[in-house]
Image (cartoon, rainbow, N blue to C red; front, side, top):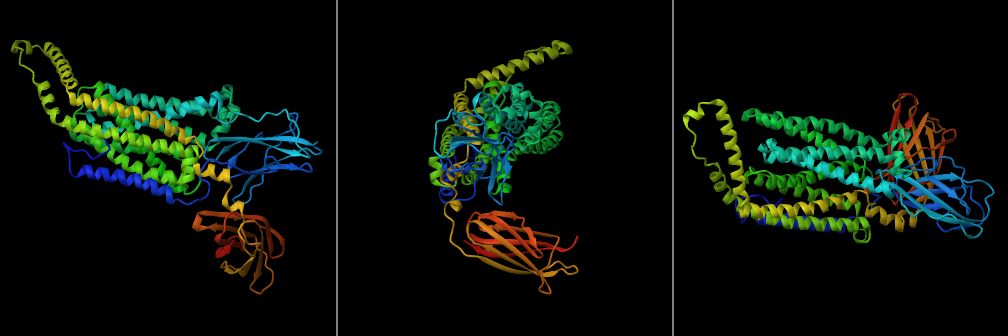
Length: 636
């Protein structure tokens, strides 16, 4: 519906205000994308490197194949497969070994010894931290390239018929959420009499049924969606158990539990609440339903935020509540729009007050959508090149264009609403005028009187509907709201596609390589000296740290601890962590190995970016005496 502030007629103040809000939204989006700097990967893990590299020709057979990713992934037994030119397994078929160090995510598989020359194919499949399956393949050669019978997989992980059904269920889940939450909010906030209207009850219940069915389908298909791609595996109990142990599986189960609470909310809303006639009691019940329904709706929205794009990458602790607000605003706007459409076409009783209240709700929702959308766009895109050169960015442009169309159509709805206000009273008064045609003798019969009352009510409703349907203002509002709903259906589909598309920031970094890995910055050895005191007996000493070569990339780290007497000092526990606060990187844990008394060392410590790094050192000198000290060091 309208995204401008409601008023009975044209307002010289509020129209410019609404235009200013819309202009500020568009300008904010442009500058938010333009000024956003490059940062760590946002979501959707991507392959950033391999050893051997794609297309490489090595002189001798390597002992293992390693793959590096932009962020954490979940792997299984067959996540990385190496095939020889004839298609046979060249790896040992063991579970991939986690070789990650610090912020570098790396997995490897061992190869059989004595591999002959030729071209080998590496096929991999894993699950990204934001719940989406990822896959790929590449080749390398030993000695010289050769012909191979292995065909590179043409279907990506999460594709095929299972992927299609899963994506349909994902879209249905969003649609059901919008109808359930938006329809309930429309009844409680905009049109309380709608609780007794059968079409409104059907709309909300169908939203609940759709969301519940879609969630069950996604839970059953989760295993084949991220694995084999076969429908039969949906009923594999072992696979279902493994899904329940994952973050997406837990989110789906939590959603089902919350939908049980939502069913109780619906029963009260269209049962006890609809039958309540005392205004004071109904007002109290409205407040209780609003609070309880808000908690349930927020919980359901959080099942998406905690398992998809918002749950991983930079500023996840901010992104998740922002994503919840975004989803709730979408539901309030689009779900309320669907409710208004049903009310206009299926019920004769909705009046100007309900339409005006929804106009206010829609305006507030658009403001929230603008603010949260700008933040999400910066977080997932981050640059002009990613906005225009990636599929995610292009879908985002399409989404913004659809929102602009929706707001334009809403402007026409706003004008029809103003005209509806002028004619609604006359229509109501005309419909409510009923002639006194019954005699006192007939009224004396209670049964006959009740029957006549029902007939009179039906005639009144029919007359009111006929009068309202003949009202050109009401018909115009119907058409414009129907157009809004049609655009909203497409908008919801584009939004669903965005949730399953690799963010532009990550795609661009994976294609071009991370800036930190492409060219190590020049630097020199870093030497630090930090006194400490754990507060216990023999708890004083000095920590000396050497980091060499002291630049981005791989570094060797040595730690010496001297006691208060200047002699080497052993401690039960020593831990280090590196944090680049200016770029929100870290803390990156480092676990050094003890080499000798008072001497610890860690090799291949990966420092991804040059900057002023804070180095935290935790020293424990007894079971209860421990202290953490820190110092900044310029690296790179």
